[in-house]
Length: 117
Image (tube, rainbow, N blue to C red; front, side):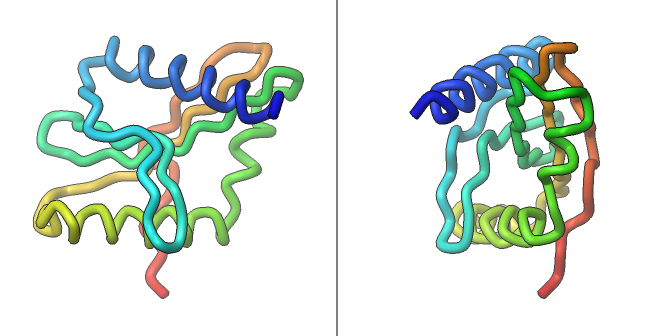
């Protein structure tokens, strides 16, 4: 339960940061049939699917390493489900990762490309 609380706090921190950069929130904690997306943001005309990794006691880079190929695949499937539901399949998209550690917040735009499978 402690990890879940830290995760929610990290998502709020990431959301505040991304909004300060001009993005707007479309949806929080979207659940598709094969995965969950922490934040879905709008950056201009781009739909941004954001994975947040909060590691209060970890080192910089630990959260990024947790976004494995399998996690990327699940995120891609959830993103596709979201786009189909909204009838937004013609919009540009990207996948970002926000890592929060004791060293601070690191935002990696275009952290990975959609996984086709």
